[in-house]
Amino acid sequence: MSPLRVTRTLPEDATDAALRADVLNGLTATPKTLPPKWFYDARGSELFEEITELPEYYPTRAEREILLARSGEIAAASGARTLVELGSGSSEKTRLLIDALTGLEVYVPVDVSESALTQAGQVLIEERPWLTVHALIADFTGRMELPETPGPRLLAFLGGTIGNLLPAERARFLASIRRLLAPGDTLLLGTDLVKDEEVLVRAYDDAAGVTAEFNKNVLAVVDRELDADFNPDSFDHVALWDADNEWIEMRLRSRVAQTVKVPALDLAVDFAAGEELRTEVSAKFRRAGVTAELAATGLELTNWWTDSQGRFALSLSMAR
Image 1 (tube, helix red, strand yellow):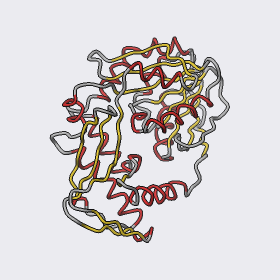
Image 2 (tube, rainbow, N blue to C red; image 1 turned 120 degrees about the vertical axis):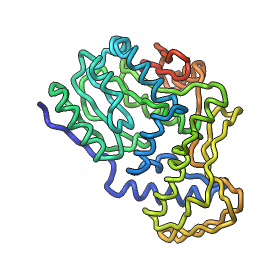
Image 3 (tube, rainbow, N blue to C red; image 1 turned 45 degrees about the horizontal axis):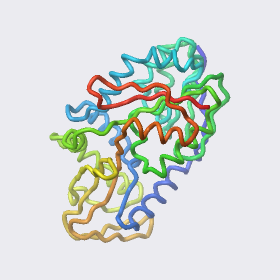
């Protein structure tokens, strides 16, 4: 059994510096925003796991359905000896790919959370002693370097997370991904698809209120880390469909006129009654759009798989 290898490319203080910059820039912008990555402290991660099991939230089940049915095809088409996963977390779904990739030698999970990486990595090594796991502590939205591993590589970005990036951000992100890939390497990309508005909104505004609590958790993170005095009960959860941009927006709407203080940033932020703070954009896709965005960065879409209801897609693209 090979030992778990861990490489850190993220400075120890990078998370705190990024949070400070995002909160300062977001709360002084018009309209106000906070990036969705700050949902995911320990409590936020627990809440998201609950969300994935809600009847209204279909993406996780739909993607797993595709992986169960198509992992063998994905493995055959990629021929990968190295699997790289961005935002790997617990690496739960990835086990389906790992077991299908008969020529796989190395798994490279990439995440900002060292604890999540080491915990998942150790479990994988114990379960599959033939596998080399080289965990990478990095922010995949920034400049990233992968360890030297045998090719061809399959880079997986699952869960529809790419939808959290605005179009210009997606273009930069896909260009950065292409730079990591050699000709013949492949990208496996999860994308949630455009569908009925009611289905989409319900997925982000469930009857049990779990997504509302998840949305407000970003305020708890800012309170704890930056000594702010947000009162989550003073905000309402809002989820709406933007038909022009074909994305869901999650927002927090101030119930009253209020001033929030963020002492760590020497900042006081005024909210008018009814003013909204955008916390997430979740773009939904069509095959033609995905194909075009990939092609613009030198990636050729070669395979497209959807779940049985056509709600979610996994696409495989080759670097040329």
